[in-house]
Length: 495
Image (cartoon, rainbow, N blue to C red):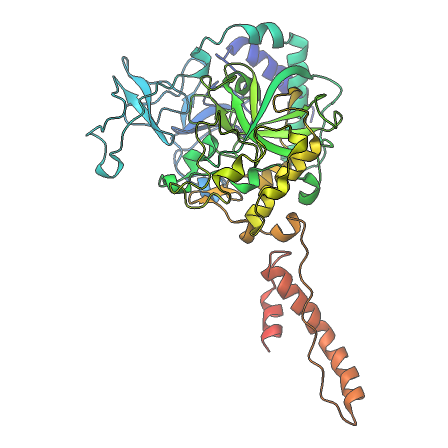
């Protein structure tokens, strides 16, 4: 443990000397491809593929069996540094960083799922060098690395921090990393400090897929590219409790200026394919423009708010809330659209409260016939209870590590996977998470009556007591309330 202070000092020194183009150096659970530097002393950034690079002491090419099963694919193990960027070769996906190795090439978008390096691009046309099964039109929008964009200098003027602030933040993140490694609960954040003001917030729910999930669909399937009901506002009390005293867990679309503050993609919740990062990273927010100015909410980036969208050229967060899309401004609403397999609500449902003060929303206009619809409606009700006075409040905010329980609820493999959105009906503890309770077991059959009925009934109840407990265990395991029965318990039930 004596080495910990020197690690924090070395991390600060690395930030100062290496001077990555933008953002902070990465922890072990974060993508390091944007900065090419690592927080923990002795760790280096190694490339896995065109969408991910990770911090480790050393790297051996091939499959790493400690990776999550859904990400157990080979590592290239090429070193990545501040002056040796992980730019894409010709034919590789380039959207993650927005840069190309080959001179004269730029990163052009085909669709939300794919971008590659080309010398030029003709929009809305087929490119005959594409494989036949992928021969669809290109948008040809140029994707550029966020640090190469000129968004003005308002960020450094309004939100710049001195060296002491940087050192304090590194120490806090070091402590949080230690806790993550040791599996401890709680947090080390001093919530009285490091708040910033002026984050412009809006709300949306267009049913369209989150940009952080696009890379998870394999193979790409537009019909399954949609926003998971898990991403609706969620009550932490239904998922193991709050970490910071927050009342809501939220997801949303962060502007590029805000993404720089969030940092790299986390390993839990997808990756940004638009030259940025920040997927799976969180802010703690509050607002005085609400009925509950003391309420805290944790909001995670699951999408990008592009600079050409209204207001997103500044520090901006568009919060995902069912029923709160404004069809006058929504550019990508696919709710009820036949291009998607099932969006859980129709287009008119998505905008029932888009143009009214959130605290006046009638969320009961939303359907509630399925677990997904109930999650969506409950999210609307929870957000309404916060009581925004209007749809564009300013938030106070500060970066925080995402609560582990929140991550477990929305992570890849729980909310979304390679096939698309995961059903809430199949999620362990879904009935409890949605506020329900398991139904009572049916009553035992009444034994036959007769002279010895009372005695047999008494003996039968004694004999059946262990079995009834096992039967209850069987039901609870089958319905995801606890672990499934053991083989021995199963044999007892079948006898």
